[in-house]
Length: 79
Image (cartoon, rainbow, N blue to C red; front, side):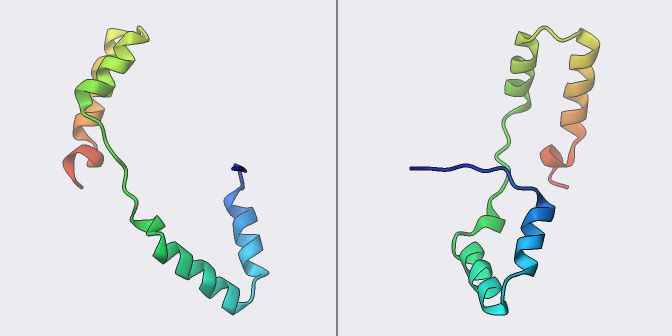
């Protein structure tokens, strides 16, 4: 069985603040073990993103702005 729950950051921080130092250390070790903080955004090609948006019939002006914005973004320029 798998359970998914949406929890706000403030709730997570509140729960952590109620934990002992040992429990916090265990959580930290699990984060490191599972390399959760090393998971990176898997970007798609700009062309593929644009194709998806074109299928939704957005205006040409919006599509041009989106494509220009994506090409200039830090995600696609490594900044």
